[in-house]
Length: 371
Image (cartoon, rainbow, N blue to C red; front, side):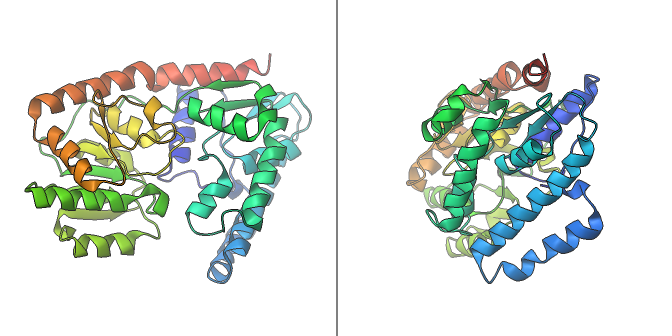
């Protein structure tokens, strides 16, 4: 990935880099874009020609060349052979690091951002077929690479249990469960909300913003007119805009597209709503709680480890937007309940997800591998 963006991966490593910098640690970010721009950008641009022709070929091209350029950049960064820890953000980058390192004194660790498997993620985007040749190839690589790592950081107990069940050999890899974390945000909030609801994420089927549009429409039929900001770009935007028009809520929704500093938009809203069908963690929920926003999400993947139903927000059923609307109304129309949830959300963040505490735990684990 590029250094900046709206994904949870980018939020994780940029927050951790900031923490390391503030604590005086020596750390740097290496990406495929650290390699020669004369080669990187033309190569990646060719994928635009392949993409409409063959999904498997497009995904292979994307993954292969990102891996090649990252391995080249890492080979330069690691060439002196000094003891160092490489903190990889995906299996492909872990593979590049394992092949680029100059001995076991250069440790390779990885954080499990993926939702079960990177193959499942590509299939959920509709780019490859689940169970097809590319999906099986990615999962075979995960089974090969993950057991070779020096350490694994799981962002949730759900991810640890799920991955060990699928790849039993990784149970022998030294590991720790450390949640994603963010910095304490500034205290000030706008006097008036920009909209009632905000949701942030790539507009793709797995993120399921369709459900949020349906909840808004169900609330309108009950007599509650709420507004919503949808932050993020992606292939689903046109379908979402069409759905909002057909359900009569297009004037209640702002499609803001990709925003490089999306989390800075959170304070201008009252609640955070999430429709994802799967999340290994869901760092954006933590970012919302940091600002004191009650959160709504389905209890899937690692989400139940993030917040408790009825305490910092509410779980809702993704197959029943009417029930979702009732739960939303029960918060937005009740100032006392809203205030209680908001206070609990901020308290939960400070206790479990604030960077000065969790960042230290992560740094200690990574550094312990050099001892």
